[in-house]
Length: 85
Picture 1 (cartoon, rainbow, N blue to C red):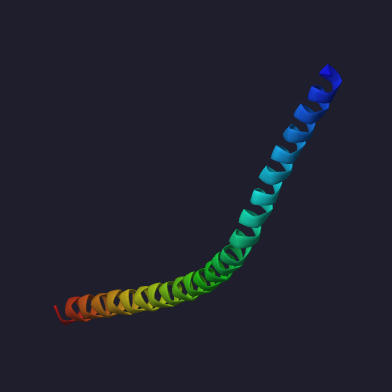
Picture 2 (picture 1 turned 45 degrees about the horizontal axis):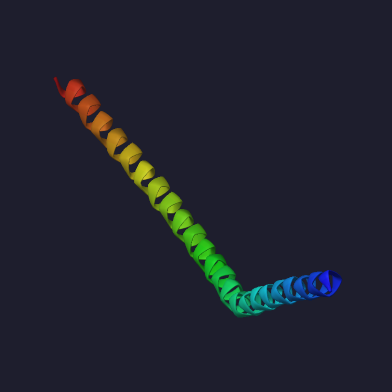
């Protein structure tokens, strides 16, 4: 009698674990498309980030060039003013 109850208890335990695993599998299958979408979105944002970084680098380079030219012009003006004196 006790053995029968132990077996039934063990079967109930196993069925409970199977139900938990099935629920987890169902949840995983529902999450998988969202995970793929999130991965695609992350790749898109990474590409956009790289484009913006490249633009920033180009603008920074152009600004430095401009400042160097402006500085050179100021030096040229100062030299020409000293030569006039």
